[in-house]
Length: 393
Image (cartoon, rainbow, N blue to C red; front, top):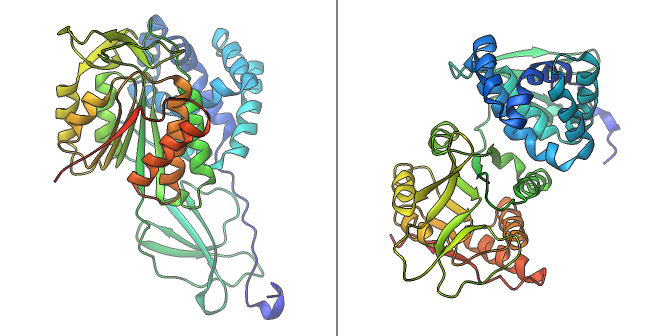
């Protein structure tokens, strides 16, 4: 079809400023010493000066940005230099340039940060959600822009809440269209913990790969990725309440029983418990100071049982987590756990394969098999370590 023929399809160009990079940089600057270095003395001053609402927004934005900061050396260097002088305009300018380059490449991340920046976390209120649709002849939809506040020249039908208004630029014919039934969106909640004194894990790489998988997925409009880093037990509980996830992914360390311990490089274990001991098993979260906090399988299972009406799948990407998986599977349809220690590389490859399949529209059972195969394809002899548990009901 000739796109110019008879005006059957109207072409348009909508230039939008997804977010104000300068405002984001200025907002984050005073919080970076706490976000990057856990400076407890500075934390009290920040709360007093800016309030808890601003702190929660800064922390939420940092959970989105941290994997990128860890991955891109120039971005990390700019953020690190700004820590020493948060009020320095020149250092803010350097960070602003790095953020601008990053967010132009990652529009999904930009939209997410925009929403957080606009949101009032103390009340849960946020700016109106705007959907802009442009149609051609016979009400044929030829383009749509949606998200937070849309800045710049917007053309087409704009839906704000339940009201409809029209805005047009010269040369474009715009027809009002009825509001469509929204696409069902599933939320993937990623929880990470790498407490002080435990083996460093490449959690940033794992989450970055999940983000890349989401951005390349043809079904990316059906999924939303939420991240919480260095989680405490309170963070986990609040994230389940706030995000309403259907899929929960935990990456970190576990403690469990292994009759014949096998050492491997950079495993996601804190320690091996002898089969003859009665020492507890569980997952390691962080306490308020970043130290390890062991949470038992029973406590974790009881928590998820309270969210059984919304959570469909739990992935425990940590060593010896099959005990927790068995307990959680009493209430949750699908749970993945590790029956022994798993290496960092194997854990990351499993996550990539699992979510590539899930984000492509495949079911959990297929995603699990592809995750195991992803380990095998990398010649890592740990493809039998992940185990899928299903609710018998």
